[in-house]
Image (cartoon, rainbow, N blue to C red; front, side, top):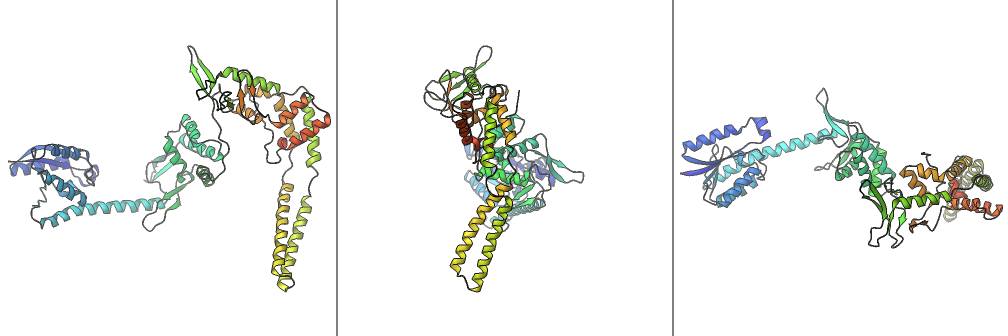
Length: 521
C-alpha cells in the first residue's frame, strides 16, 4: 500500500478573492486516497504564497523527508499544480529534489505521469499558467501604483509625522499627525542651521516624543514628502521624477533643499554645539592640565545624591569636582567686571572714535552712482569707436575690462552706502549692561547662556590646575576695558587701544559684535 502526505496550501488573498478553503482541499484529497487505497501519513497545512518555496511549513516537511529518505512516504499529493508552485523554474527544481528522495509529487485534479516525456509539455502549461497570472497581477499593481503616485497620492503606510485616513468619498490620504509633525518640522529647522549634528537633533526630538529610530530619522530627513513632493523611481523607459503631492506639506521646498545641502556637505556648517548638563556647563571648554586632552564630565552616584566631576578620558588620572571648577570660573568672571563708572567712560570713548573713524569716510550714494554711469558711458563710447574702425579690438577689450573692474568695486561701495547705519549707541548700551552684570548673568543664566558667555569671553580653551583657570587669550574688547578699569595707561593710549578693538565691538571686518544675552535672572 502506498503512503502519501497531503499538502494543502491557500494564501489569505486567494481565500478572500476566490473562495479557496483548506477544508475543501482536504476533503477532496482524502476522498482520492480512500478511492485509490492510499494511506495518509500526515496532512500539511500552509497559509503562504506559492511564488517561491521559501515557506515555513514546506521547509519543515522537506527537512523531515530528507532526514528519513525513502522510509516515510511515497507521494506528496495536492489538488492542482498551482497549489504546489506558481513559479515554473522553482517547481521543476523541487520536483527533481523530491524524485531524488524517492517521492512523487502529484496533483489529483491534473494528474500526469512524468515518466512519459510528452506529459512534461502539459506540466509546463500547468506551471506556467499561474506564473503568468501572478506576473500579470504584479504588473497591474505596479502600473496602478505608479499612476496613483503621479496623481500625488502616497501609496503606503504614512511616514512619521503623518497618519493614513480615508475620506468620506473613499479616497485614501495622509494628513499631519501631532505632535510628531511639529517635531519633524523642528528637526528640519535645526539641521539647516548647521549648528548641531543630526544625531544630536534626533536625540532631542526623541526625548520630546518623536517616535522614530535613528536610521528612520535620517531617511525621513531625505524624504521630499515633507515639502509636498513625491518621488517616483525610474521604471523601464521612464526617468525618475518628483511630482506634487495632494497632501499638506510640513515644510517649504526651500527649507527641504537647504537641509539636503547641509547633510551633503554643500553648505558651510557652523561649529557644532555641545549639549551639556546643568551641573557641567564647561564641558567642551576645558583642556586636561596633564595631557592636554579635552576634559569630559560625568556623575557619580553617592549615598544620597549624584556628585559631578570633570575628568580626562585618558589614564592620566586628571579629575576635578565640578563644583570647584564652576566656582572658579565665576570668580574669574567677577574679576572682569569693570569698576563703577569705568564702563561708561569706555563706551563714550568708543562712541567718539567710531564717529571719527567711520561716519565721514567714503563717497555718498549719489557720487557713486554718478561714477558708475560715467564708466558705463566710457564703455559705450569705446564700443562706438570700435564699430567705426577708430579703435582696434585689443584696445577696446582693455578699456572694457578696466571699466568693468572699477564698476564692480563701486557697486560694492554702493551696497555699503545703502546699508542702514549701525546704531552704535544702543550696541554700546547693551555691551556696558552685559559687562556690569557679567557674573550675575552667568550665575543665573541657563546652560546655553553660560556656554555662550564662556565662548565669547574666552576664545581659547581653558585649563584648570585645581585652583584657578588659565587661558592664552581673553576677548580683546573685554581685555582693553579691564585695563582701562584698572587705570593702566593714559587717556590717549586707552582711546587708541579701544579704537583697535572697535571693529570687534560694532561688527566690522567680518568679526561678530560683542554679544548680548537674555537677562535670565
